[in-house]
Image 1 (spheres, helix red, strand yellow):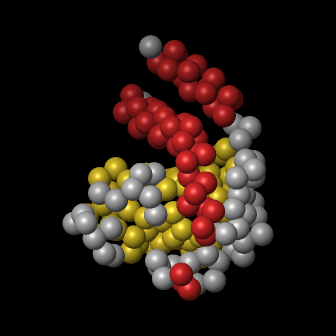
Image 2: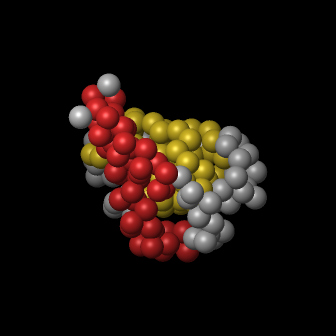
Length: 160
């Protein structure tokens, strides 16, 4: 059983390795109407995925301020969907990039997973806030892939 599981993981890794490389992930919680902040120093094109497991968390990114918020002057990119949020950071952004996770006030707490990938998928990189949110519909299959990787990682840690 263990050998089959390892074989499946290796096959999936090779199949997806050409496009994305998982650099980091965080599981955390944010209180409604509050922010959690992170700093990202990785170079290159970066794909950030925020998966709200409980509640609704939103994603804000800035190369200018260390504490991005929903105020248009305080973020460079945003993704504020009711589902999974995705932002592609161009390699031209000044590093470190600041990430703000906002807990929507409709929920007392929001539990989330924040995934950071280095990507070669630069086709969908957007430099404007408005088109960034609209591009999320085109990313549906990628989100499924990332969720699958996250679940496989949990299963791997449970089994081994």
